[in-house]
Structure formats: C-alpha cells, structure tokens
Length: 164
Length: 184
Image (cartoon, rainbow over all chains, first blue to last red; front, top):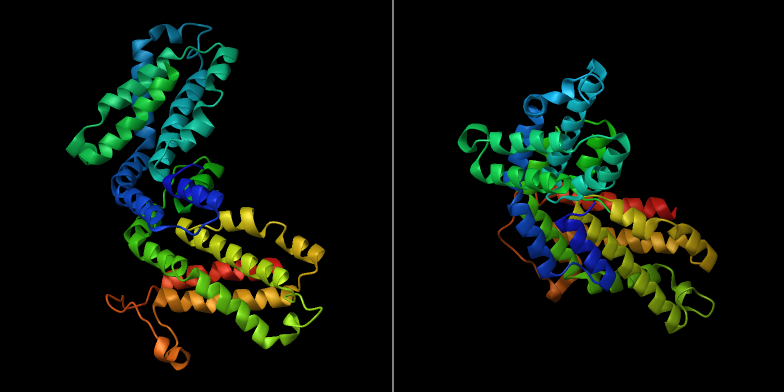
C-alpha cells in the first residue's frame, strides 16, 4: 500500500542503502501532517452511517426516477445496495485519511469501477450527487477542524473526479 | 509493503469496518520523532555494528576463518559481511515503517532455504543477528557498554527520555527475533 513511508523505504531499498537523513525528514513531514488526517478519520468513522444515509437520500432526491419500477432504487434490496455502495466509498475515504494517500481508494474503489458500473447498467451520476452532497455538507468548526476538513474534502473531490 | 497505518487499514478492511483504533495511530504519531531517532541511531552506526557482529561471531568460533571454514577466503568473508548488512538494513526499514511486512517479504522469505542450499551455518548466522540485536538495543537506548568501550566511549547524551524508548527497544527486538526465528 502506497504511503510516504513505504515509498521512502522502497526507494532506499532499490538503492540498497540505509534510510538517509532526507528519508527520515520526508517521513517526519508526513507524521507532522497526520494529526489533521487522523482527526478527520476519527470523526468520519464515528458518523459513517449518518453521513452515508444523508448522502444517499440527497442523491435519490435529486434523481427521483431511480424509484420507478425497474430502476436502480426501486426495491428494498436495491435501496440497501445503493446505501451500502455509498458507505463503501466513505469507508475507503476513511482508509485514505488513515494511510495519508489515495492508495485504498485507487486499489479497492476506483480500479475497475467504470467497467463494473457499465456491466451492471448503473448510472454514475447519482453517486456523484451523493458524494457532492457530502463534499458540501462538512462545516469547519462544527464537524471537525479546518485542516481536517480540507483533507477530507480533497479525498471526496478525488473520488468525484474519478466518477465523472 | 505495509506500514503501521496501512496495516490498520488492511485489518479493518478484512472485516469491512472502519478503522476504529485511532488512539494507537495517534500514539505512533506522537512518538514519531523517537522512532526516527532510533532509526537514525542504527543507520548511522550500521557499518560498525555489522563488522563488530561478524567479528564477534568469528571470535567465538575460530573455525570459520580457517581453511574450509565458511568465512575462510576473503570472498566468503565479504559475502558474510554483506549479508549481515542486508539483514540489519531490512530490520531498520521495518522499524521505520512500524510493521514487519517489508522484512518478511523482502528479506526473510526463503532465506533459510537459500542458506541451506549454500551451506551457510545458520547457528553462526543467528549468533551474528543476536549480537546486532544487542547493539541495536544499546544504540536506541543510547546506553553503550562502559565496561568495554574504554576510551572510545561515545554517548549522544541528553536529551534522554525517562524510559529510554523502552517500547521502541521492544519493537526492534521483535524484528531481530523474527530473523532468528526465520533462520532456526
């Protein structure tokens, strides 16, 4: 899994040398920025269900046709699956906040996502709507500190970009 | 390759849950500078540690440098020094990452079989690793042996922390123990 530490180690290993002072400084920089990320991860982890449900409902509100018979949100099973998908994405965003890079999203969320949605005939616009709602829902002193919110929003932007 | 953070993520993903033990990661962050100092202490004394460990191993078993011994021609002695340095290097990486996966995947996987095929005596290799373990502990604690160092005694001196980084010492020991376990 790609992170600052593993990247530094991989480079040092390729050169066959011990971690140098500049390697250690790179790791120190990453550690110093970790506090904000961990704060965001903690808050998101504690409220994942609520955040996911709000985002899901916002998407269905924007695209009510999904409730029509035969559409992606028409039955209880489908509804549960839609909510689960949003929750999956938010969980991966929490992982990215922990790791400090986009590795978990890239490896477990984005790789192959386009092909899967095409094969299942699912529209990506509602996902974008849900995540955009979450993107604009966070509020700096109320939900988490400004720095933490910046980290969280940046990952949501990254994910929205990959879907659009 | 994983580090302490991605290890937490992989474990959480196995049960499709969010990472809940943030406190442990905060602790890792809070003690980050100590960890970097420990890595630096080992990395900047590495060549000395390696040659001392191999020399100590040979002192205890002189047969290694006599004709037919496994360190006998310079070529094989050089290979021995190189291997000790490689093992110490991967232990240092593991200590930096806070996770043993880099050591396991890139160093220990198949090491015993390789040594068996090459006829390297694992008991001697283990002895050298044990000496490096003791050296690493002394360097992380900044607690060199006053009995043997004599005039060469060198300490980094204050600021020292009360517990002399006991957690990091234990963690580094666990990585050396992994090497020993993989060889035996």
